[in-house]
Image (cartoon, rainbow, N blue to C red; front, side, top):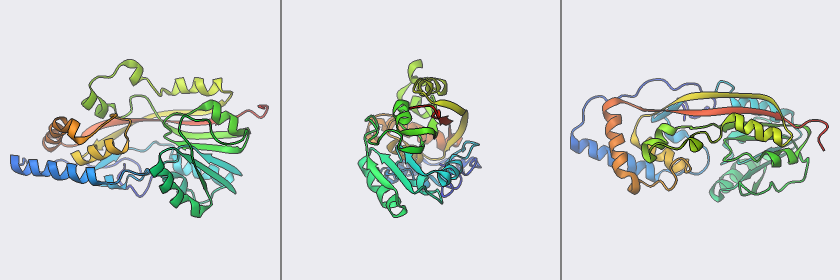
Amino acid sequence: MNSNPADPEQGQGQGQGRSQGPHSQGTAARAFDDLVAEAEAAPTEGWDFSWFEGRATEERPSWRYAESMARRLARASASLDIQTGGGEVLASAATLPPLAVATEGWPANVAKATALLHPRGVAVVAAPEDAPLPFADGAFDLVTSRHPVKAHFDEIARVLRPGGTYFAQHVGPASVFEVVEYFLGPQPDEVRDARHPEAERAEAEAAGLEVVDLRAERLRMEFRDIGAVVHFLRKVVWMVPGFTVAAYRPRLRELHDRIQAEGPFVAHSTRHLFDLRKPDSAA
């Protein structure tokens, strides 16, 4: 989500998108129903967030992941993109290595990624997120991933060649928890602290990888209408597990009224950048 969804590295969205005045109860009710119905009908496959244009914004990390990834892909000889989604981020790279492979676990995304990446010569492999990577030891000199559900550093280290790199952007702790806790209530510390970059650093080092760079940022998000919230929760299904409009309709209506009266619902995403290296001496 950003101010120009066609540009995956666009910076902050601008403006507050406040309502232009009070609505009558009937008009507000119709607007709520229409917005929710539109969001429920929108497709959720892949990681194309252009549907949010004009309805939600999100700051982008300062390191401009897609651009940095593309520069590394242009220099690589064999690359693996883990949990590629619909393949949109990988496809944004102008030059791909002679051997380029991507994995994805969700069947709808596998089909979308194959259609997008196969013409570019990328092999898309259906692979469950928690299963061992179906590749030989030392098969790749570059492994990438944008927002993996879980990074299995031991498997990443195994498929990297000595001297190879894991370059990835991860979702950090308590990301968009203003939305999560609005629907689910306060979360325990162990849930809020999951995905902490320092915990992941320790996992990576335990797998034998060297941390070349690790950066973290907290980024502002704005949801400008209730349809954007519904679409977000349908698309990013792990935020509020089991989310349906029917189950959360009263809370959705309350949030709609709040946005109408006060302006965008503000949340914050957390992201961290990993640049990891497998030592030259690694077996």
